[in-house]
Picture 1 (cartoon, rainbow, N blue to C red):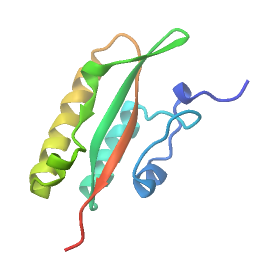
Picture 2 (picture 1 turned 60 degrees about the vertical axis):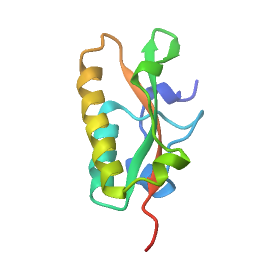
Picture 3 (picture 1 turned 135 degrees about the vertical axis):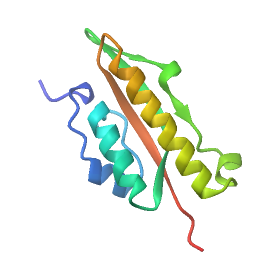
Amino acid sequence: MGKEPRDGGADVEAVYARGKSGNYPNPYLTPQDLRDLLDRCQGGGKLICNIEAYEIDGEFDKPRIDLGFYAGGVSEQMRQWDERVAEAAEFVESLLDDVAEEPNPIMFIVWLDARASA
């Protein structure tokens, strides 16, 4: 049996370069991967704009809408970049604190937004 997305193993640099992690069969990001990606984004010209969270419960990957972040819409893109970066970073930090309290593992799919060239 091959590796499942729920096994983790996402390549954070590839996710950063591509601008998103993928759906099956691509691996989910672990909480540490998400933290590493946030650090990478804060040092570059991208931000985490959308997060889908999944609770790994036995054989099931349960979507956790309550742990998601959806800020990649057109109205968001019209806001000041620095505000968006700060909001995304604050959300991810809070999310990671919340996830640490969860009884089951939580894994992530993410999308990034790139700063528009001036």
